[in-house]
Length: 238
Image (cartoon, rainbow, N blue to C red; front, side, top):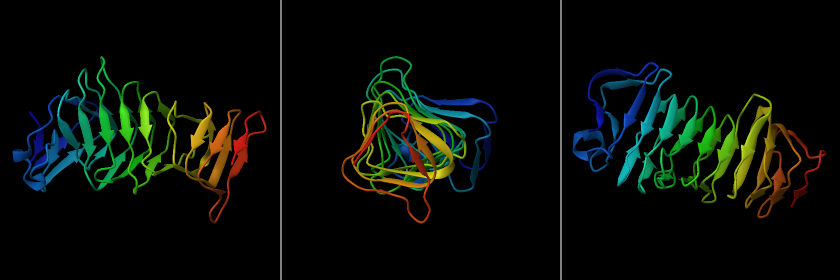
């Protein structure tokens, strides 16, 4: 059964909302033909508080509504479900997690509808999960990046925006396309990393002792320029 806000306010406060079904399109009059486990109709309000919204369908395709969340999670137990982000603007004020409680192999797709996704905290993809990035809308991440599954860049851009120091980027066996650093913090690549597009260092500091390969594009700064320091042992290959 989907959670539908027709009027009034759904305030989650500190609770976790677990959505185990794919949703029913007929109940969301603003989104006819789209299966949405969480649906906020015009006139309704969704207050995320410091909650977690967890999409847990084990089959079919579910649409993740273009809302603001605190923690946003896909966490099916089994199966091969698909979770598609709705078009529009989506802000996750804390962490995004693509996980499974057992052995599900889910696909999380931001490429079909190309939403503007901003994650202020950590981005985590666990083993067996696949995240498909938009090829036209930037994916902004303010925290750490940990990929133990599969990140499909689709020739898109990831922007790291942290103002904190010591943020870690671990993309596992996957590759980035374009990466931009545009925050006052610092980042370290936890593993050797390959970019198939360009690296832009607008502000902040990138350091580490792992190799960085930029295969298909350029290394530049934009209007301002941050620092790149691999003097502790890493090498940048262009």
